[in-house]
Image (tube, rainbow, N blue to C red):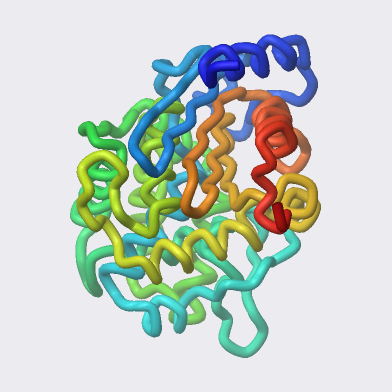
Length: 308
Ligand code: GLN
């Protein structure tokens, strides 16, 4: 079957699954159409295939975390970034305040504590919220190959109920992991999470990570190869939070979920994948998105640990 027909078939086969529920802790996300369903693939040769609601924009949310981590590594260097945020799985929920004993570093950049730290590391020390947010937006736009915008409605809505992330940021400042005003850092991080994307953008952005940091369409080196490798490695061990182990065992694709229902995955040397389906499971991962990945992995033999 040609790839577009195959993608249509996968969506049709899974469309009826209405298990899970849309995120409700961010008021604006509660209003999302739960039936949206889309998938896109971008190969390292730069071809994109998609099906379903592939032009619908939604907030990138936690799928911003690997890209922000890559940008922070590029801006500040690996040793400094690693002195502030670790690379080990936390085995805990995404919004847990999980700090290592001794160093007080967040365990990894995929949980909120680590992602708030990573956002704070963008550009340089003592920089402003506007400059960090612009760095994230421009970097994500370069990866997507089109100018992305921030959905201010989502930012505002999430900031109305951001006590948990504020608590995390205050604790991070208490331990000297971040230096700036926790309110500014959380506002910047929330703006980063509110960048609007489609699954086609996500597949394109992820394809650069799958392609060793080289943009598959423009041929530009967006990040150095070791940064792409490090980012995918952290996605493999922590991208699905406390479900990361079972996810990697079953599917074998480094991935990152977002609470608006997005899911991205990267297969090194092959393809970037993006899906959208807003109903989430108890870990905060898209139910049908995960099923799409399971199908792709099984049908196309994409499990990284498979020797075929
Ligand atoms: N902005 C969201 C938060 O910080 C991102 C969480 C997610 O997508 N898992 O709570």
